Image (tube, rainbow, N blue to C red; front, side, top):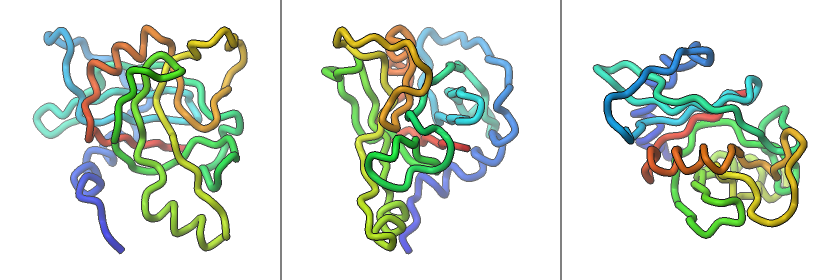
Length: 173
């Protein structure tokens, strides 16, 4: 089994963040700070952007999120409407998204693929952090995505500016 170096590097920080779902946001003196990690707490419908300061994770911004239309449990296959759980990284940016702006999540990883294949299923893919739809379709219900993590258009603009490619994203139950 191949271990992703980002996951190894992020592990100590993730352990520190595990109990920080309700952490206070710390103001930054930098106008647009770059974050080192994104953490999604699915059960709380919250996403935090963290920066490592002196070896400790500091919450810079926190957002309410919508998830897949079947929000409970880990994503198992294409079309299940679930948001994956695990450690991934931001692997692409789409400024021409149908959802204003979007940041790609590296789901599925090798473990997700192996688990899906063992069940004879396709794990799916194309998981993003994104804004609202740019079409005329209205968004009035909670947890409306196909498995992505959605925020408002104004919020994805902030996130877009703060989250570089390669940033670790941890999605917790």
